[in-house]
Amino acid sequence: MTDLLDRLRDAVGDAHVLTSDEDLAAYVVDWTGVHAGQALAVVRPASTEEVAAVVAACHGAGVAIVPQGGNTGLVGGGVPDASGSQVVLSLARMRTIREVDPVAGTITVDAGVVLADVQAAAAEAGRLFPMSLGSEGSCTIGGNLATNAGGTAVLRYGMTRELALGLEVVLPDGRVWDGLRGLRKDNTGYDLTQVFVGSEGTLGVITGAILRLFPPTPRHATAWVAVPSVAAAVSLLALAQQHAGVHLSTFEIANRQAIELVLAHLPGAVDPLSEPSDWYVLVELAGSESDDGLDEALETVLGAAVEEGHASDAAIAGSPAQRSALWALREGISEVQKVEGATLKQDVTLPIADLAEWTDAMGPRLQEILPGVRPVTYGHVGDGNLHYNLNAPVGDDDALRAAAADLSTAIYDAVASAHGSISAEHGLGRTKAAAAASYKSEVEVDLMRAVKEALDPEGLMNPGVLLPPD
Ligand code: FAD
Ligand code: MLT
Ligand code: ZN
Image (cartoon, rainbow, N blue to C red; front, side):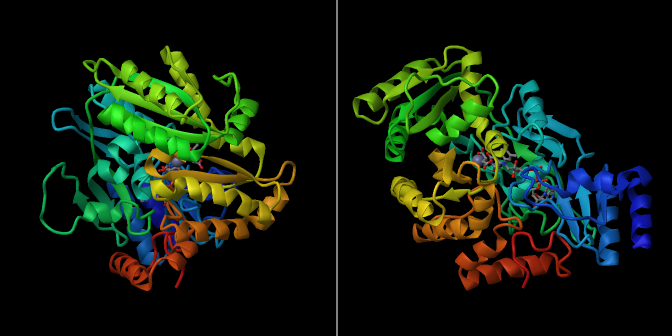
């Protein structure tokens, strides 16, 4: 391995090949603290050419690579396994915004650019890059593409997949595929960009991307709405679609348990409503400078919802500060769950029509498995996506850890029965690879393995992630 380390040092410089335990620490444990491994080295290339040299060196030595962006992934896909034989390839030094073309509506960036910096560069050019995640201050565009990230703007703009026009990728043998074309129309064969989106580092290293931009939406109308049930939230969604049309940009749900944790642990958080409710919805309409009438549309939606019994109360943001405070209640949930203690992350999608029945049935089923378990349920209900996360019974983190496999299986089985998905937006990583394969048909798993085999015949790109070992 000394030879490989020497080649890596030649490729990126001594300072960017990290091998000491102290230097590796931040790269081998994920954001949740649950997924941890060991690495032979962490390599930090600064350009596509350097990435290609690193990948070629690892390919020559038969050493596996784990690409890593901001290390905010929630399924253990961006950290190495326990073997200590893998190289973590961090994109953290590739932070250049290569080009912004407001008229074509495109932005071209290095894969290591942090999502918030892409948003800021778009805004500076008078455009909107709509993707928005709670982790946007540290996740990278390469990680977003590799996981096909979702977030709070999917309802209007789609998943990362729909924002990606072209990619630059270093292939597992070190060759570079330059697919950085911003064409809206290009029917010249298989869509290779989409093969790499959502591939979780298992097919190559994304080094650059050309992404779609949209007109800015500086006007907002935002409300925090108390709703009695998930069924009521779905009815409210229908009203919002009917009365707000294209302006509906966000429709997020949270249960009371989630908000209680936010109120307990997030400094400055205040309940905007006087009475507690079992469920809440954050609804936002967004429009351009010339879009008058957002406030009126929101009031129409809320008025109809109260009249029809789908909402009991609402707080409407009257200022940017109030809007931020309402968003903080939603965006703070992941963070406060971690503060509260052991958490079992879930990320399911269901047909919207089945959300209410599914959620109502799940609670009692989980109590049978682990009495006192606390579902902290929230997420992108407008997309049918619930983070059906679980916190431990108060003071008993070990009980949650012991029951985690049974709880997950109960949730996955119920999702499969409802024709949903066990990973809506976080990906499969190491955590869900085996489970996902077990719920897919043999044909589907064969096709996925054929893609992997064709692009990475030696199996050196992020082995064990997305597809379980054979
Ligand atoms: P990493 O965690 O570093 O890596 C994730 C995966 O992508 C790994 O498999 C890794 O190998 C691969 N990868 C990373 N970079 C590359 C590359 N350049 N080339 C090839 N493969 C690569 N996710 C959502 O979808 N929606 C949310 O609303 C959301 N909210 C979040 C809120 C919080 C507080 C946190 C901590 C996470 C949240 N996430 C959410 C999860 C996470 O932020 C996303 O999955 C994000 O896309 C990961 O980006 P990253 O740069 O941190 O990737
Ligand atoms: C979110 O939407 O806040 C995250 O995707 C969910 C999570 O952290 O579990
Ligand atoms: Zn989410």
